[in-house]
Length: 53
Image: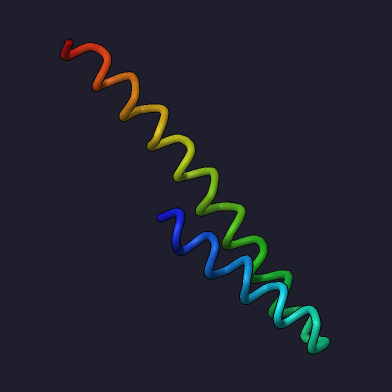
């Protein structure tokens, strides 16, 4: 999931450089949402892994 976040960030940067503001904003918002989902799942997996020990 972190790989998709990086992909959308790179897409947003490239679109911003070429002047496609709408596409850049959309890709940046998707990247932000994916990043927060990644962080939430990461924390949940840390907590669940901690309880099994």
